[in-house]
Image (cartoon, rainbow, N blue to C red; front, side, top):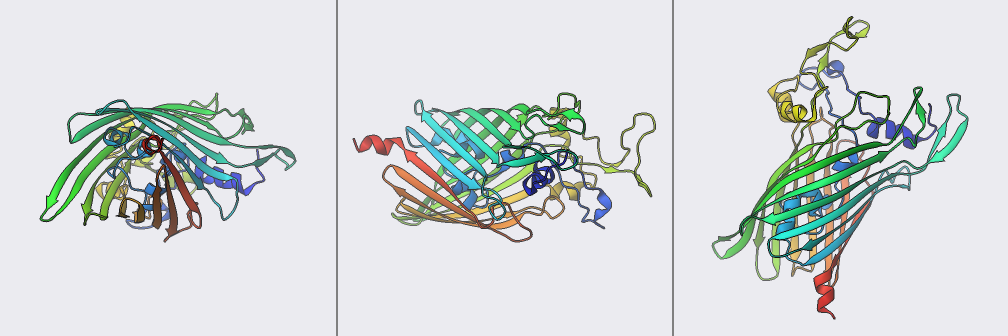
Length: 402
Protein backbone atom coordinates (compact mmCIF):
# COMPACT_ATOMS: atom_id res chain seq x y z
CA UNK A 1 0.00 0.00 0.00
CA UNK A 2 1.50 3.32 -1.03
CA UNK A 3 0.66 6.63 0.57
CA UNK A 4 0.92 9.78 -1.48
CA UNK A 5 1.38 12.23 1.36
CA UNK A 6 4.59 13.57 2.86
CA UNK A 7 2.80 13.39 6.19
CA UNK A 8 2.59 9.63 5.94
CA UNK A 9 6.22 9.30 4.90
CA UNK A 10 7.15 11.12 8.09
CA UNK A 11 4.58 9.03 9.91
CA UNK A 12 6.17 5.83 8.62
CA UNK A 13 9.72 6.99 9.28
CA UNK A 14 9.18 8.54 12.70
CA UNK A 15 5.97 7.12 14.17
CA UNK A 16 5.46 3.75 12.51
CA UNK A 17 9.13 2.71 12.27
CA UNK A 18 8.59 0.22 15.03
CA UNK A 19 11.15 -2.27 13.74
CA UNK A 20 13.57 0.22 12.19
CA UNK A 21 17.01 -0.73 13.50
CA UNK A 22 20.06 0.91 11.94
CA UNK A 23 22.99 -1.49 11.76
CA UNK A 24 26.13 -0.89 13.71
CA UNK A 25 28.43 -0.45 10.71
CA UNK A 26 26.69 2.67 9.39
CA UNK A 27 29.07 4.75 11.48
CA UNK A 28 32.62 3.85 12.37
CA UNK A 29 34.49 3.56 15.65
CA UNK A 30 32.70 4.35 18.88
CA UNK A 31 30.06 6.42 17.06
CA UNK A 32 28.02 3.49 15.83
CA UNK A 33 24.46 4.55 15.22
CA UNK A 34 22.04 2.43 17.25
CA UNK A 35 18.86 4.36 17.94
CA UNK A 36 16.18 2.81 20.15
CA UNK A 37 12.69 3.00 18.65
CA UNK A 38 9.31 2.25 20.23
CA UNK A 39 5.64 2.43 19.39
CA UNK A 40 3.47 5.43 20.41
CA UNK A 41 6.38 7.88 20.86
CA UNK A 42 3.83 10.69 21.33
CA UNK A 43 3.77 9.63 24.99
CA UNK A 44 7.26 11.11 25.39
CA UNK A 45 6.51 14.56 23.95
CA UNK A 46 6.53 17.29 26.59
CA UNK A 47 2.82 18.22 26.56
CA UNK A 48 2.83 21.52 28.47
CA UNK A 49 4.54 24.83 27.81
CA UNK A 50 6.18 25.17 31.23
CA UNK A 51 8.05 21.86 30.98
CA UNK A 52 8.72 22.53 27.31
CA UNK A 53 10.33 25.88 28.14
CA UNK A 54 12.56 24.22 30.76
CA UNK A 55 14.26 21.98 28.20
CA UNK A 56 11.72 19.16 28.70
CA UNK A 57 12.43 18.96 32.44
CA UNK A 58 9.88 18.68 35.22
CA UNK A 59 10.29 15.61 37.44
CA UNK A 60 11.02 17.75 40.51
CA UNK A 61 9.76 21.24 39.66
CA UNK A 62 7.01 22.72 41.82
CA UNK A 63 3.66 20.89 41.44
CA UNK A 64 1.03 22.19 39.05
CA UNK A 65 -1.88 20.88 36.99
CA UNK A 66 0.49 19.33 34.43
CA UNK A 67 2.38 17.12 36.90
CA UNK A 68 0.83 13.97 35.40
CA UNK A 69 3.40 13.72 32.60
CA UNK A 70 6.46 14.58 34.69
CA UNK A 71 5.81 13.05 38.10
CA UNK A 72 2.30 12.18 39.37
CA UNK A 73 3.59 12.08 42.98
CA UNK A 74 3.96 15.87 42.89
CA UNK A 75 0.17 16.26 43.01
CA UNK A 76 0.22 15.42 46.72
CA UNK A 77 2.07 18.71 47.37
CA UNK A 78 -0.08 20.93 45.16
CA UNK A 79 -1.23 23.97 47.17
CA UNK A 80 -4.64 24.49 45.54
CA UNK A 81 -7.87 22.58 46.06
CA UNK A 82 -8.64 22.13 42.38
CA UNK A 83 -7.31 23.15 39.00
CA UNK A 84 -6.98 22.18 35.38
CA UNK A 85 -4.84 22.99 32.36
CA UNK A 86 -5.27 22.95 28.58
CA UNK A 87 -2.16 22.78 26.36
CA UNK A 88 -1.66 22.92 22.60
CA UNK A 89 1.52 22.06 20.67
CA UNK A 90 1.65 22.39 16.86
CA UNK A 91 3.67 19.61 15.23
CA UNK A 92 5.70 19.93 11.99
CA UNK A 93 4.26 23.40 11.55
CA UNK A 94 6.87 24.21 8.87
CA UNK A 95 5.30 21.54 6.66
CA UNK A 96 1.64 21.25 7.62
CA UNK A 97 -0.94 22.98 9.77
CA UNK A 98 -3.15 20.09 10.93
CA UNK A 99 -0.79 17.93 13.04
CA UNK A 100 -0.84 18.79 16.74
CA UNK A 101 -0.71 17.51 20.31
CA UNK A 102 -3.49 18.53 22.68
CA UNK A 103 -3.33 17.96 26.43
CA UNK A 104 -6.10 18.39 29.01
CA UNK A 105 -5.46 17.65 32.67
CA UNK A 106 -7.06 18.41 36.01
CA UNK A 107 -6.70 17.52 39.68
CA UNK A 108 -8.71 17.55 42.90
CA UNK A 109 -7.19 17.61 46.38
CA UNK A 110 -9.22 15.25 48.58
CA UNK A 111 -7.54 16.40 51.79
CA UNK A 112 -4.13 17.57 52.95
CA UNK A 113 -2.53 14.24 52.06
CA UNK A 114 -4.44 12.86 49.07
CA UNK A 115 -4.95 14.10 45.52
CA UNK A 116 -6.51 12.54 42.44
CA UNK A 117 -6.01 13.68 38.86
CA UNK A 118 -6.91 12.80 35.29
CA UNK A 119 -5.53 13.76 31.89
CA UNK A 120 -6.25 13.27 28.20
CA UNK A 121 -3.45 13.45 25.62
CA UNK A 122 -4.57 13.58 21.98
CA UNK A 123 -2.20 13.47 19.00
CA UNK A 124 -3.65 14.21 15.56
CA UNK A 125 -1.66 13.31 12.43
CA UNK A 126 -3.82 15.49 10.21
CA UNK A 127 -5.53 14.41 6.99
CA UNK A 128 -3.75 11.82 4.83
CA UNK A 129 -4.62 10.55 1.35
CA UNK A 130 -4.37 6.77 1.01
CA UNK A 131 -3.77 5.31 -2.47
CA UNK A 132 -3.67 1.86 -3.96
CA UNK A 133 -0.51 0.17 -5.25
CA UNK A 134 -0.59 1.98 -8.59
CA UNK A 135 -1.31 5.38 -7.08
CA UNK A 136 -5.07 5.65 -7.48
CA UNK A 137 -6.60 7.65 -4.61
CA UNK A 138 -8.77 5.68 -2.22
CA UNK A 139 -9.85 8.06 0.49
CA UNK A 140 -8.76 10.66 2.98
CA UNK A 141 -8.23 9.53 6.56
CA UNK A 142 -7.34 11.25 9.80
CA UNK A 143 -5.04 9.04 11.91
CA UNK A 144 -4.87 9.85 15.60
CA UNK A 145 -3.66 8.57 18.94
CA UNK A 146 -4.73 9.29 22.50
CA UNK A 147 -3.93 8.33 26.08
CA UNK A 148 -6.34 8.62 29.00
CA UNK A 149 -4.74 8.75 32.46
CA UNK A 150 -5.85 8.62 36.06
CA UNK A 151 -3.64 8.98 39.13
CA UNK A 152 -3.67 8.88 42.90
CA UNK A 153 -0.99 10.71 44.90
CA UNK A 154 -0.48 10.61 48.65
CA UNK A 155 1.83 12.27 51.16
CA UNK A 156 3.80 9.85 53.29
CA UNK A 157 5.15 12.66 55.47
CA UNK A 158 5.67 16.41 55.30
CA UNK A 159 8.56 15.82 52.90
CA UNK A 160 7.75 12.65 50.93
CA UNK A 161 4.97 11.58 48.61
CA UNK A 162 4.23 8.78 46.17
CA UNK A 163 1.96 8.39 43.20
CA UNK A 164 0.60 5.71 40.90
CA UNK A 165 -1.06 6.32 37.56
CA UNK A 166 -3.01 4.09 35.17
CA UNK A 167 -3.07 4.76 31.43
CA UNK A 168 -5.16 3.55 28.48
CA UNK A 169 -3.45 4.00 25.10
CA UNK A 170 -5.23 3.93 21.74
CA UNK A 171 -3.31 4.37 18.47
CA UNK A 172 -5.37 4.38 15.27
CA UNK A 173 -2.83 5.08 12.53
CA UNK A 174 -4.01 3.16 9.45
CA UNK A 175 -7.82 3.32 9.80
CA UNK A 176 -8.15 -0.41 9.05
CA UNK A 177 -6.35 -0.28 5.69
CA UNK A 178 -4.66 -3.35 4.20
CA UNK A 179 -0.87 -3.10 4.47
CA UNK A 180 1.30 -5.79 2.90
CA UNK A 181 -1.76 -7.96 2.33
CA UNK A 182 -2.85 -7.87 5.97
CA UNK A 183 -5.64 -5.83 7.47
CA UNK A 184 -4.33 -3.30 9.96
CA UNK A 185 -6.03 -2.44 13.22
CA UNK A 186 -5.79 0.12 15.96
CA UNK A 187 -3.09 -0.53 18.54
CA UNK A 188 -4.24 -0.76 22.16
CA UNK A 189 -2.17 -0.90 25.33
CA UNK A 190 -2.49 -0.25 29.04
CA UNK A 191 0.29 1.09 31.22
CA UNK A 192 1.14 2.42 34.65
CA UNK A 193 3.45 5.00 36.24
CA UNK A 194 5.15 4.66 39.63
CA UNK A 195 6.66 7.81 41.13
CA UNK A 196 8.03 9.43 44.28
CA UNK A 197 8.70 13.05 45.20
CA UNK A 198 10.63 14.77 47.96
CA UNK A 199 10.71 18.44 48.93
CA UNK A 200 12.22 20.24 51.90
CA UNK A 201 12.53 23.87 52.95
CA UNK A 202 16.16 24.93 53.34
CA UNK A 203 18.09 27.98 54.53
CA UNK A 204 21.33 29.28 53.04
CA UNK A 205 22.40 32.11 55.28
CA UNK A 206 19.93 34.94 54.84
CA UNK A 207 18.33 33.24 51.83
CA UNK A 208 15.74 30.49 52.06
CA UNK A 209 14.50 28.10 49.43
CA UNK A 210 13.19 24.65 48.59
CA UNK A 211 15.19 21.59 47.57
CA UNK A 212 13.31 18.81 45.78
CA UNK A 213 13.94 15.67 43.79
CA UNK A 214 11.71 13.20 42.03
CA UNK A 215 11.66 9.85 40.29
CA UNK A 216 9.10 8.58 37.79
CA UNK A 217 9.04 5.27 35.93
CA UNK A 218 6.38 5.84 33.31
CA UNK A 219 4.57 3.75 30.70
CA UNK A 220 5.15 0.36 32.30
CA UNK A 221 2.76 -1.47 30.03
CA UNK A 222 1.85 -4.10 27.51
CA UNK A 223 3.35 -4.28 24.05
CA UNK A 224 1.32 -3.01 21.12
CA UNK A 225 0.51 -4.33 17.63
CA UNK A 226 -1.19 -2.80 14.59
CA UNK A 227 -2.33 -6.06 13.02
CA UNK A 228 -4.56 -8.87 14.23
CA UNK A 229 -2.32 -11.39 12.46
CA UNK A 230 1.02 -9.97 13.63
CA UNK A 231 2.39 -12.12 16.43
CA UNK A 232 5.27 -9.68 16.98
CA UNK A 233 4.42 -6.74 19.17
CA UNK A 234 6.39 -3.61 19.94
CA UNK A 235 7.40 -1.98 23.19
CA UNK A 236 5.84 1.26 24.29
CA UNK A 237 8.27 3.92 25.65
CA UNK A 238 8.78 2.82 29.24
CA UNK A 239 10.95 5.60 30.67
CA UNK A 240 13.06 6.17 33.77
CA UNK A 241 13.19 9.83 34.83
CA UNK A 242 15.03 11.20 37.88
CA UNK A 243 16.36 14.57 38.91
CA UNK A 244 16.71 17.37 41.49
CA UNK A 245 15.64 21.00 41.61
CA UNK A 246 16.54 23.95 43.79
CA UNK A 247 14.36 27.01 44.30
CA UNK A 248 16.01 30.10 45.79
CA UNK A 249 13.88 32.91 47.19
CA UNK A 250 16.09 35.90 46.45
CA UNK A 251 13.80 38.31 48.27
CA UNK A 252 10.12 38.88 48.87
CA UNK A 253 9.39 39.33 45.17
CA UNK A 254 12.04 37.39 43.24
CA UNK A 255 12.84 33.68 43.05
CA UNK A 256 14.94 31.39 40.85
CA UNK A 257 14.59 27.64 40.27
CA UNK A 258 17.26 25.37 38.78
CA UNK A 259 16.21 21.91 37.65
CA UNK A 260 17.70 18.83 35.96
CA UNK A 261 16.08 15.67 34.56
CA UNK A 262 17.97 12.50 33.60
CA UNK A 263 16.10 10.06 31.33
CA UNK A 264 16.64 6.52 30.07
CA UNK A 265 14.32 4.35 28.00
CA UNK A 266 13.70 1.00 29.73
CA UNK A 267 13.31 -1.00 26.52
CA UNK A 268 15.85 -3.33 24.87
CA UNK A 269 18.67 -1.88 22.80
CA UNK A 270 18.82 -3.24 19.22
CA UNK A 271 21.70 -5.74 18.94
CA UNK A 272 24.35 -5.88 16.23
CA UNK A 273 23.33 -8.48 13.66
CA UNK A 274 25.73 -10.73 11.78
CA UNK A 275 26.28 -9.55 8.20
CA UNK A 276 28.03 -10.77 5.07
CA UNK A 277 28.44 -9.29 1.60
CA UNK A 278 24.73 -9.89 0.94
CA UNK A 279 23.51 -8.20 4.10
CA UNK A 280 22.14 -9.57 7.40
CA UNK A 281 22.55 -13.33 7.93
CA UNK A 282 19.58 -15.42 9.05
CA UNK A 283 19.49 -18.71 10.90
CA UNK A 284 18.75 -21.53 8.43
CA UNK A 285 16.51 -23.28 10.97
CA UNK A 286 14.54 -20.47 12.60
CA UNK A 287 14.80 -17.90 9.81
CA UNK A 288 15.65 -15.21 12.36
CA UNK A 289 18.52 -12.76 12.14
CA UNK A 290 21.70 -13.97 13.87
CA UNK A 291 22.88 -11.69 16.69
CA UNK A 292 26.59 -10.90 16.50
CA UNK A 293 26.72 -8.79 19.65
CA UNK A 294 24.15 -7.73 22.19
CA UNK A 295 21.01 -9.41 23.48
CA UNK A 296 17.76 -10.65 21.97
CA UNK A 297 15.25 -7.74 22.04
CA UNK A 298 12.22 -10.04 21.68
CA UNK A 299 11.59 -10.49 25.39
CA UNK A 300 8.80 -9.75 27.85
CA UNK A 301 8.13 -6.25 29.16
CA UNK A 302 9.61 -6.97 32.58
CA UNK A 303 12.68 -8.68 31.12
CA UNK A 304 13.09 -5.79 28.70
CA UNK A 305 13.07 -3.27 31.54
CA UNK A 306 15.74 -5.25 33.41
CA UNK A 307 18.07 -5.97 30.51
CA UNK A 308 17.81 -2.38 29.22
CA UNK A 309 20.41 -1.47 31.86
CA UNK A 310 23.09 -3.78 30.44
CA UNK A 311 22.15 -5.00 26.94
CA UNK A 312 23.82 -2.32 24.77
CA UNK A 313 25.98 -4.17 22.21
CA UNK A 314 28.65 -1.48 22.50
CA UNK A 315 29.10 -2.23 26.20
CA UNK A 316 29.17 0.19 29.13
CA UNK A 317 30.10 3.22 27.03
CA UNK A 318 27.06 2.75 24.78
CA UNK A 319 24.83 2.15 27.79
CA UNK A 320 25.90 5.53 29.18
CA UNK A 321 25.07 7.18 25.85
CA UNK A 322 21.48 6.07 26.27
CA UNK A 323 20.94 8.66 29.02
CA UNK A 324 19.52 12.00 27.93
CA UNK A 325 19.67 15.20 29.98
CA UNK A 326 17.25 18.10 30.32
CA UNK A 327 17.96 21.20 32.40
CA UNK A 328 16.19 24.48 32.95
CA UNK A 329 16.07 27.75 34.86
CA UNK A 330 12.88 29.50 35.93
CA UNK A 331 12.63 33.05 37.27
CA UNK A 332 9.48 34.39 38.95
CA UNK A 333 8.65 37.97 39.86
CA UNK A 334 6.07 38.34 42.61
CA UNK A 335 4.53 35.01 41.56
CA UNK A 336 2.96 36.90 38.64
CA UNK A 337 5.47 36.84 35.78
CA UNK A 338 8.09 34.23 34.89
CA UNK A 339 10.89 33.77 32.36
CA UNK A 340 12.24 30.31 31.53
CA UNK A 341 15.07 28.73 29.59
CA UNK A 342 16.41 25.24 29.13
CA UNK A 343 18.59 22.83 27.20
CA UNK A 344 18.09 19.21 26.12
CA UNK A 345 20.92 16.82 25.20
CA UNK A 346 20.77 13.40 23.56
CA UNK A 347 23.80 11.54 22.21
CA UNK A 348 24.25 11.60 18.43
CA UNK A 349 24.14 7.81 18.24
CA UNK A 350 20.80 7.67 20.10
CA UNK A 351 18.71 10.26 18.28
CA UNK A 352 20.91 13.38 18.33
CA UNK A 353 18.27 15.72 19.75
CA UNK A 354 19.93 18.86 21.04
CA UNK A 355 17.98 22.05 21.51
CA UNK A 356 17.54 25.20 23.55
CA UNK A 357 14.14 26.27 24.83
CA UNK A 358 12.72 29.61 25.90
CA UNK A 359 9.44 30.55 27.50
CA UNK A 360 7.43 32.82 29.73
CA UNK A 361 4.51 32.60 32.09
CA UNK A 362 1.88 34.99 33.39
CA UNK A 363 -0.59 34.60 36.25
CA UNK A 364 -3.60 36.88 36.56
CA UNK A 365 -6.30 36.12 39.11
CA UNK A 366 -8.04 32.96 37.94
CA UNK A 367 -5.92 32.27 34.85
CA UNK A 368 -2.33 31.42 34.10
CA UNK A 369 -0.76 31.38 30.65
CA UNK A 370 2.55 29.74 29.68
CA UNK A 371 4.45 29.87 26.38
CA UNK A 372 7.38 27.83 25.04
CA UNK A 373 9.64 28.10 22.00
CA UNK A 374 12.25 25.59 20.81
CA UNK A 375 15.56 26.29 19.02
CA UNK A 376 17.20 23.13 17.54
CA UNK A 377 20.99 22.83 17.33
CA UNK A 378 21.94 19.62 15.52
CA UNK A 379 18.97 18.79 13.32
CA UNK A 380 15.46 19.85 12.47
CA UNK A 381 12.88 19.37 15.19
CA UNK A 382 9.10 18.95 14.71
CA UNK A 383 8.56 21.74 17.27
CA UNK A 384 10.96 24.31 15.82
CA UNK A 385 9.55 27.70 14.82
CA UNK A 386 6.33 27.00 16.70
CA UNK A 387 4.84 28.52 19.82
CA UNK A 388 3.38 26.13 22.35
CA UNK A 389 1.04 27.35 25.05
CA UNK A 390 -0.74 26.15 28.18
CA UNK A 391 -3.75 27.73 29.85
CA UNK A 392 -4.16 27.04 33.57
CA UNK A 393 -7.30 27.65 35.59
CA UNK A 394 -7.24 28.11 39.37
CA UNK A 395 -10.56 27.22 41.01
CA UNK A 396 -9.45 28.58 44.39
CA UNK A 397 -8.92 32.02 42.91
CA UNK A 398 -12.27 31.76 41.14
CA UNK A 399 -14.08 30.96 44.40
CA UNK A 400 -12.24 33.80 46.13
CA UNK A 401 -13.78 36.27 43.71
CA UNK A 402 -17.32 35.20 44.56
